[in-house]
Image 1 (cartoon, rainbow, N blue to C red):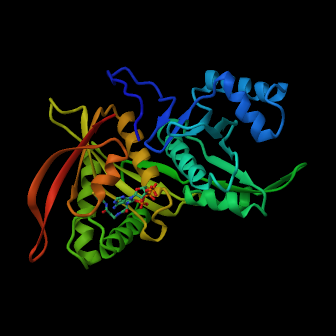
Image 2 (image 1 turned 180 degrees about the vertical axis):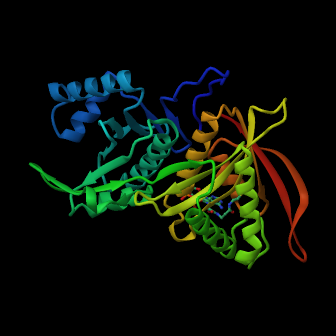
Image 3 (image 1 turned 45 degrees about the horizontal axis):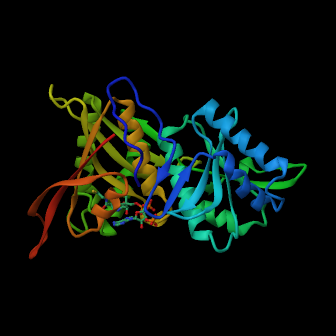
Length: 337
Ligand SMILES: CC(C)(COP(=O)(O)OP(=O)(O)OC[C@H]1O[C@@H](n2cnc3c(N)ncnc32)[C@H](O)[C@@H]1OP(=O)(O)O)[C@@H](O)C(=O)NCCC(=O)NCCS
């Protein structure tokens, strides 16, 4: 993913308006996008309503600095839209593409990007989308972008019954409450057991992991380190990582990300992307301009972090001995925020 570059100069920064990846681009609407809206509505291109809808979308962008994006396959025509619309107490996601079945993968991609963007940049409000109970296809798209059904929010309007799905939320903590600590320890052990590169040899016990978690708790108490967790709408832990600030007088604008992990049971549902978005938001809010992290070579993680703007800046061959005869490179990556 590449966001338009901007500089952070200590006086705040602006929210990116476009999202550009190799496969897909998402831009705020221009007047000519009324023809796409007309196609989606099944009305003539010169009809009044599509132009009105585009005008409303543009006003929303002007007022809120976010809104509806037009989705294009790289270099291709507009195929649909994904939107974030302000409500008083939440932000509503909307999604529509032409020839739905053919664009299913694109819809998922666009929704995943919009969700991570919302976590990283938008006001800290619940992000929701509603679907008709019989619309299993949309519900599955939303679930693959990390959303979960919150039955308490289901409701009925003149248009019928609605199920409401909500994105996980990010919590930035300066200390670890004991119940959260238990969930983090359990997840850390489970992630390690599942082969995750989170600092331990395979099969490490809770007794081995606990002192390292306690070490983070102490560093948090001392200041400069924060725990960023991703939680389901009902508060279950879905993933976490630590943001460790730099204290040196020359490096205060830098921080490292450590122990990034998501629940193995829900992998592949965008939670890693949402967690990275939350970590970047937390870092930016603390005035961080430069982020570094390291990972274990041979895990594919370089590809994962490259998606979120990181570049390899260093590699120590064979630095990590995972098992006798299995030495891995220690790889360092960095990005500016
Ligand atoms: C790395 C990790 C946090 C990613 O979380 P996740 O919940 O699987 O992430 P997402 O579902 O958001 O995946 C985002 C994208 O990255 C890709 N991806 C995920 N893990 C990857 C990996 N190890 N290597 C390459 N790509 C990866 C996914 O395929 C997905 O791509 P897609 O959008 O094209 O489908 C998770 O796999 C994890 O906890 N791993 C074990 C712990 C670990 O090794 N942490 C790294 C410490 S440096």
